[in-house]
Image 1 (cartoon, rainbow, N blue to C red):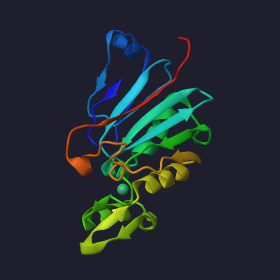
Image 2: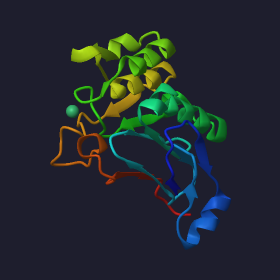
Image 3: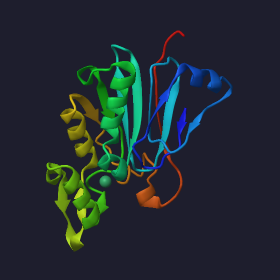
Length: 195
Ligand SMILES: [Zn+2]
């Protein structure tokens, strides 16, 4: 199941009927930046240039989710929207969820203008903890820290994250901000098991 990303906050649910439809290949979800499923052996995927992949796993249901969080999705609380969708669809409790935030652009390299920094301040009253003023009226934003805070505020406390920055680590990752090219990393998650 592949997401066609638009930096929004829509969450797709992959249901048994979708699995049947996908048996001859893959399904693309248009205008969707997150997906959830409780179906076994379904691989949720999304492509990432510098945006952060947020992996969610509830071992008790079990169910999984995958969110694509750039700055717009992070501003729109995409990780929490995905947690909420898992709660609505599969009765997942936030305290049972385990989250991992994969490699993405770090505070070191995510430089934005005052307008973007202000958007985060307007939306989250704690956002200043994750925004550093830089030279030339620019700001550096810690998206990973903001997502961790969003998840913990909604009750997901088992959150781990990669410390790797996709822009800095040209030896490991593609980066849109570094190269302005179309190569992407693929994030994927799957519940393995017998059907
Ligand atoms: Zn960096």
